[in-house]
Image 1 (cartoon, rainbow, N blue to C red):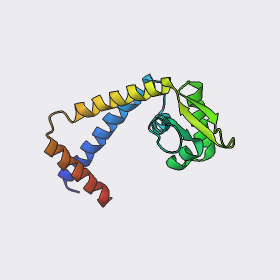
Image 2: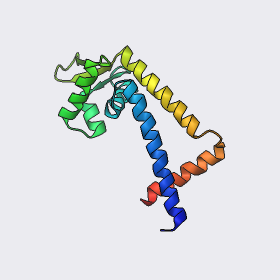
Image 3: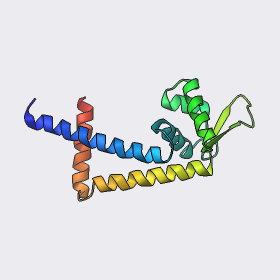
Image 4: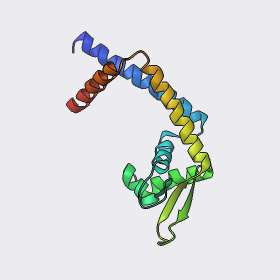
Amino acid sequence: MEREEFQIFELLKRLSDTMEKKANSDLQSNDITASQLKMLLAVVHSEGSYEKGEMPLKELERRFGVAQSTAAGIIQRLEKKKLVESVTDKDDKRIKIVRITDSGRNICSHVMNSMDENHKRILKGFTKEEKQAFRDMLQKMINNS
């Protein structure tokens, strides 16, 4: 591998590490994990046959490719933090519905705002065309992998 190629991957790794460190700091200050945030965001942005902000536990299992016990454990921890609540479907008592709470919405909003600010800071000074070119190059790298 040429020195320039090595430097590209070293820079990508440093950027990734920096972004992960900032994200983990934001999550830790809000007392949630990345897995918990993913499930919260899935519920808060849910659409379908249930109300917005509601999602069957089975759908979370399917969407994230996790076992029932894993999804249930994450949801239980979110319930203890009062970020979601679980209810049974009014038409089918076998179906467990996860519903976002106001506190859960607030956490999602806060974390997403922080992530948006971080992304804007990282991309500061890039033109629209440069962002598109960078995105295209990253996609090409992903396609090549």
